[in-house]
Length: 105
Image (tube, rainbow, N blue to C red; front, top):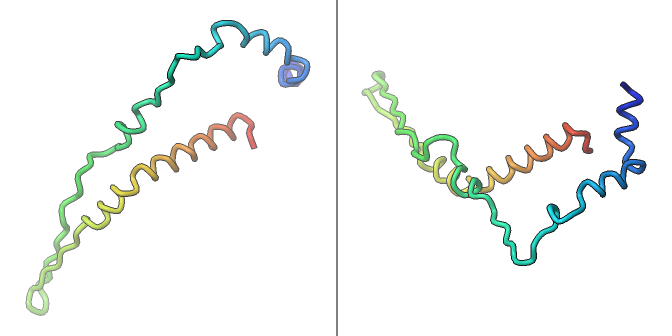
């Protein structure tokens, strides 16, 4: 099995076979053909609902019964502003991860 894998992984000896497989009219791009970017980058960038969570309130009964509230709105606005950047970084990380899994460096 090891010899078979080494023979299969030898690109230089298989170069002409590979070139003959990918040549022909099926693999030529037409001059008038346009390639559109998939819409998953602009439409499916959210994995959860885009709403911000409700404020969290904390009621203290000691020292006069003060209540405090924590708002997620500043955090939500930052996450919304950087959402496309976060998706782009995740896509690059995933591509590197998959590329290294197939033997890239």
